[in-house]
Amino acid sequence: MSSTVQMGKASLAFHEPVYIQSAASIVGKKEGEGPLKHCFDMISEDPRFGTDTWENAESTLQKETAILAIGKAGLKPSDIRMAFAGDLLAQTIASSFGIAEIGIPFYGLYGACSTIGESLSLGAMSVAAGYGSHILCAASSHFATAEKEFRFPLGYGSQRPLSATWTVTGSGACVLGDKPPLSGDLPNASPLRHENGCAVITAVTTGTVIDFGFRDSLNMGGCMAPAASDTISRHLTDFRRQPSYYDAIITGDLGRVGQRILFDLLGEKDISIASRHYDCGLLIFDNDAQDTHSGGSGCGCAAAVLAAFILPRVISGQWKKVLFVPTGAMLSKVSFNEGESVPGIAHGIVIEHVQLS
Image (cartoon, rainbow, N blue to C red; front, side):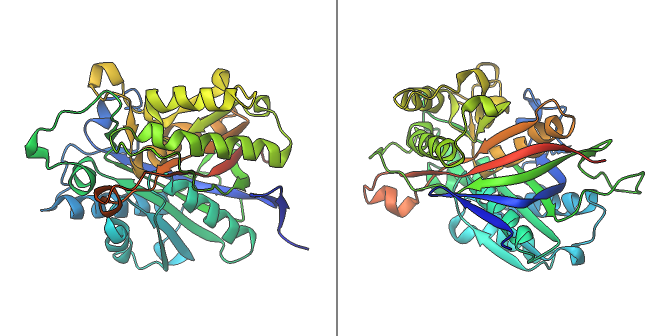
């Protein structure tokens, strides 16, 4: 019998849940001053993370987060069958250089800021299919590398419109497996469980690239909101569910602007999620106090918030069912400079609380 069931046009449900065995997050100084400052595993005061370039800094950031997640699961790098990881940089160099130092079989991903959703989807499918007992999923971003890659040199002092988001310096990583996280007092380990409460992935909805013709690279929320709307509505249709089925529906980094557009687009389909919607970009910063305008963004935004904020609430039972929808704007500096529009994508991950007997 197949390990999965195809649901509707774009979704899969797993016969056996995929366990999230551990989660880790490391962020920069600004993120460590925000509302979630007590949730992250580590906060670095050094934006270069002990290296001499911004790119090496992000590689080190992702590597250390991955090693931390593996250790928290009570595992060694040699126990990991494969890694799915990505970032925002050209040819995903932050991930490939970082994971290379750990020596794990590696698949490099690019889903822009939705990358952790892509990673968790492929990781969960691999575990469900029996391709590995322990799969590492990770994503990272860095404010300085993203500004250098996609916007303006920091020294240029470019003015940021209110629709702009602030790229998170951070990384999140999870270890997925076919068995529950380890229990008991383990030396140097901290598996993702609260007494007998665990977090599992039970289904995924693969996103479709949606292009509404937006060309403003400083309004990522507006570019990504149509994709988030499409994935959420498609997911609810595929599984014949109402938004009330979930305790929380959490998007990646739409920010203030994108959130309003998302509500409007879903409202046109008679779908209301406002009472249970959260956005990682609105959670990680205090926009007014920290002057981050529309909110946070970057691959590390959804990844770090998932590991530090969302999963602890799932394992405690505060949230029983969560629809996690990381969002991404699929642009490159080449496509933008050639006048192309900025399409978006969003992947849906169903994360549920289970109580082990």
